[in-house]
Image (tube, rainbow, N blue to C red; front, side):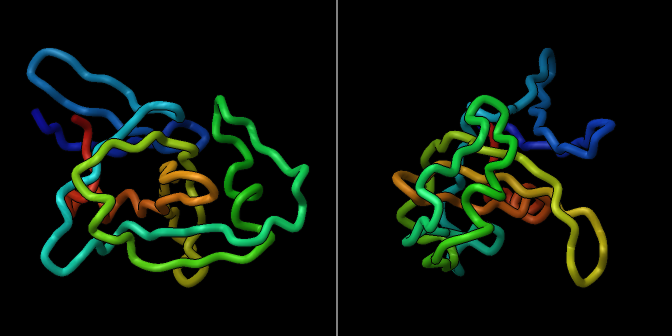
Length: 140
């Protein structure tokens, strides 16, 4: 049964997801999995595909238990192929690598994002607010 995801912020502005049912709730954390919806007719709007093609610092790492420093590890150096997430990734579960709140460069507003493991050197960038509202990501 599909459950909608609700976004909350902790005191440190780190978002987490919670599924509501009539009798229980559960928090989603790094290491857990979320389900992507079947691809919408016009494609995913809030899910992007990033494949890292060059790692200048091969000794770089991040905390795999908490997801801390994943953004810096993956995105701050190197080269990428980026595009809207292809529909072939739809209707499947993916493990959460990191959940983070970024600041929108244009508005200064908080921008909660989640990074999903799509395979070797490949992640999905999930704009949480939009993806949840559009039902592109949910708990199974």
